[in-house]
Image (cartoon, rainbow, N blue to C red; front, side, top):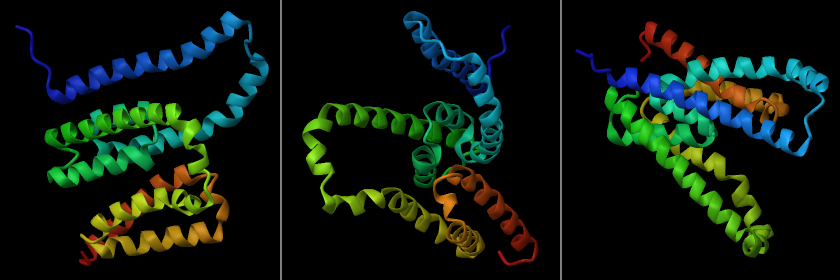
Length: 221
């Protein structure tokens, strides 16, 4: 008699299969275009570029996998790493959904909630992009208005600020040192704002975990 797979086993199996399919599709499209239009790249220059840049992305991939998976769950992680924009969109959506449902990402209920939240986020993002492409020309004068420029510059801080208030208010002691560290780093090293901001999210998470552990051992939490 065939043994039925558990939920997590099925998520891992189908997540692996579909991620491989998406990877092949992502690589396949530019290769197909290059073959059809006879515009293949200079492979020597391509290889040199890969050698120069790939190690950084490998390091980021390992760090993000270790950091995000416990927060998003397996299903949410598979979906997030395919659709992208994790720190700015997928992670806040998943955390907010888990908060509203009062479940943990490590539970099966949390897995389902996180995956649904990220899937809905991806669908809404796609629909907004479609609407934006259709309306970009008539809305360009409005979007380029100087009065709206400060608002667009604060969209991401506003998103994380609202989300941060919810979690920081639960145990503000944990947040003091991580916030202080990030403020000092971004003020002292302004280049972090543009060059390595993606790496700083996992760094901040790991630092927060370490601080929380020390504070817990000392009876401060």
